[in-house]
Image 1: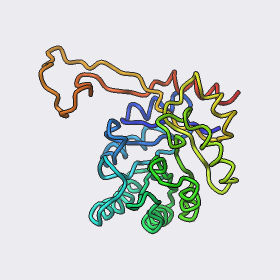
Image 2: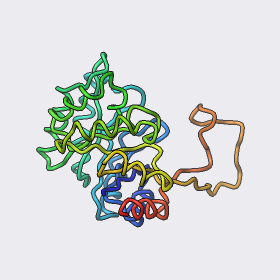
Image 3: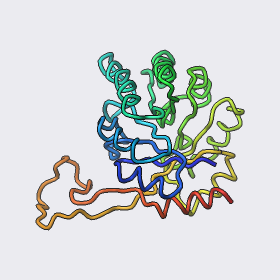
Image 4: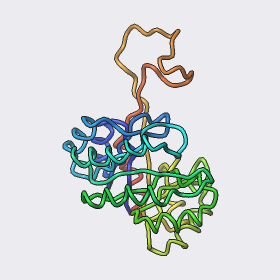
Length: 247
């Protein structure tokens, strides 16, 4: 069983390895579902751990339909990720009709493979109109795995589809379940779906060191997003999930 941790900082990457993670998905802006981290974050993360670091290739939040300029950014970020130590990339591209953008996804896979990296097709998969058709398309592109919550907000809610995808994939691609997986549900989800890879955050909220705090302003403009706290991966939580997954 492989346990991948979604990490939003270098510290989270380090904690993920301490907890026994098999791999990390390195992102920025987790409140937007993850965007491409800085070159320095990729470099220091990769140098800080021995486990593979897969880098999110996503130029912005929002949907997964990208302009020509955005796609050019994504292609260049693949090379940057490799330059600074990434073992692989994570991306997802869709067409207006809700199908997988086979051509562009294939281009990113090819660019990654040329540099010795693999690619995960992320939860853009859960926004497709026909997940079974999407599965076959992603397989054609050469991606290593699909990350999915089974078309639901949480993987536990989408376990029926996850199970169907595992069976349909028949070993041609790995189906990795993610979203809302924790020590309380991981064993049941593995047993029910037959997955061999799990994607978790294992995070806890850490209070910042500021003494003076201006409570009148939301710097990001979105109420509810913490201004003086950060989410950091908890090695203990990761360790529990790793242990439970091995039983």
